Image (cartoon, rainbow, N blue to C red; front, side, top):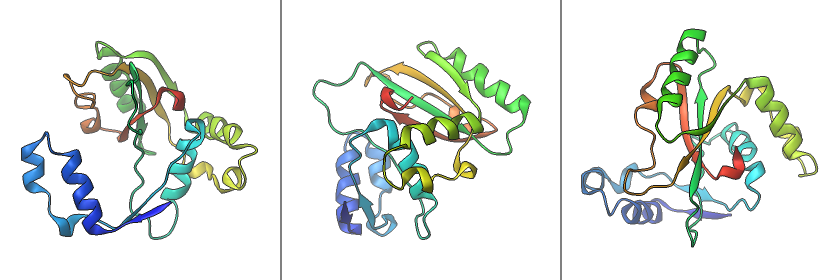
Length: 176
C-alpha cells in the first residue's frame, strides 16, 4: 500500500483524463484528496475489501480499478448497487433498463442477504476480512457482463441516474 499525495493524485488524474479535454479543464489540484493505493491480487475478495474499507473512519470513498492488462479482457463485469431504500417499482425499472442494454449478458439480481453470504464465503480463510464484513454494508445489486469496447465507452448509459441506484462499478468479470 502506498500513500498518494494531492499532487500525485492530480498528475495521475491528468494522465487518466488526457483523452477528455472538457473534464481535464475542470480538474483542479486542490480538489484531489490524498489517498492510499493498494493492489488486491484476488479479484474474488476485492468487493469485500471495498465494502470493509468504506466503513473505516476517515475514508470518504473507495474505488476499484483494474490494472493495465495486455491483452485487454474481452468482457467487463458491471455491478449496479441499489440504495437500501429502493422500492420494488424502482428495482423493476433498473432491472428493465439493464436488460434493455443491447450487449448486457448474464444479468442477475442479488439481494442484500445473498450478497453478504457470497462475500462471507469468499472471505473464509482470508484473515480478519470475514470478521470485518458487516451485513449492513452489503446492498442488493444487479450484476452483468458487457463487452469491452473502448470506442463505445465503458459506462453503461444512464444507469447511475435511475431512481434507486446507489453506485455503478465496472469490475473484472471474476468479481461477479
